Length: 120
Length: 108
Image (cartoon, each protein chain N blue to C red):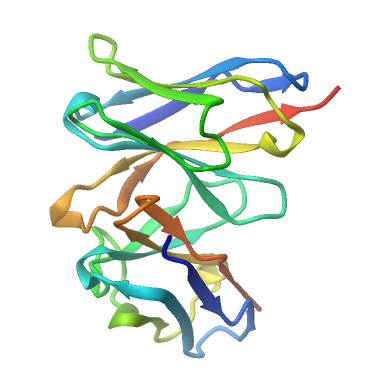
């Protein structure tokens, strides 16, 4: 059974840093495209970042240069390093698996989400 | 960047009625790469439709998707109480690689 479990959220100060983790089971993270998607309070879903199976990464303009996506193949875990935090980074962060070409590169499995609040 | 615009923003219907949700893209989207999600408060988004018209695993057949090019539609043929949620379309391709529509809130 595929499962994704996020951790690492909480309350953080503007300008601060944190690292989110997404522990995966039931499939191999390094063989998949893995994304982070966020939802700010009262807003819609916003794609944040992806790491492809080959290791290439891509970011939304809103986080480029501040956030870094990575993975640990031995732990089968996805990470998102968030630096230079801003109030507008406050959101529920979801990790999600891309189902691949046969699933239209849509996101077929999602974690339950983890809340990150940026406030002084 | 491909912008997805969903309409209506809010849709008020009753159980048993038919819902039609629209997703319009600013540029042509490959039908292979257009999906629809259901999102309820406090839950993870759930993939309903991929490849514009294919139901994901376990999705009831009252959900159907159609469309091509720049215009896509999600139909819920007969609303059940559990269908009231926010629905998003999403496309893959280009830069950025993934974009979501702003969502349609389906409410009673």
